[in-house]
Image (cartoon, rainbow, N blue to C red; front, side):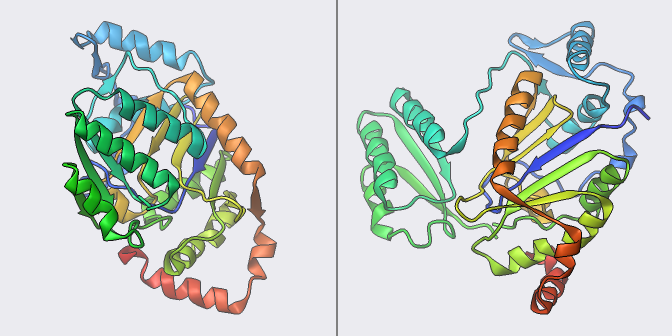
Length: 327
């Protein structure tokens, strides 16, 4: 096997957004040996698929930017198996941190739209920000730009129906989507991957929310803490002064992902989820800086302190663990 990865940071949240791909079963990591990747990966460039020689050169250049790691070989083996999508080069990726920067970028993109806008969201509130988006979407629709909106029925449960009816009356195609919105309830393979990594001295850190709107999911996720802590995984809970909403990961300062997928079987197999995977040292560095900033706003869970939690919490975790694969 190749050199083991030496750092892993996971930045997880407890919300789910709709996405675009799924598979009938999860591939087993042990079935894919990175040393068996004796051919160049399939990489698409601006003019089509790149030659094996150029593809190999790109991967070698990426490997030369970081400490020895087998994440690139593993990624090229698994990415097409899991998603059916090849690597694509020639991209520009900008990391948006927190709401204000993200909303500004979204509003700018909406204003510049010329033909259509496909807008998908978990929460769309009838508040100042929501009305700002609604007014702009209606304006673009009136200008002849077709606006298509998908909103989650659970995330928008408290939003008045009149809010969306106004959008429909203005010509916007608005549709309601209602998946079951799971969070941190890892399956056996994911637990094994995390604990094995920690046991071979990989620095594994996971940030989770200190509280969420679903009590069942909250305690189901916490039921895994003891096993993770005993293996050496470092767990942190974001303090309650902010909502932790991102689902991101960084591995070995080169592999990053940002998307809507939660760490559970329903997200992996059933829900429609979408993630962008970025192979870039520069982007990964920005992701790690963001992670460290959130780490400073989180409390670390210590094993000995965790063992002293109230008995009722033990009971809640045991009960919700029984329901884990249906949450």
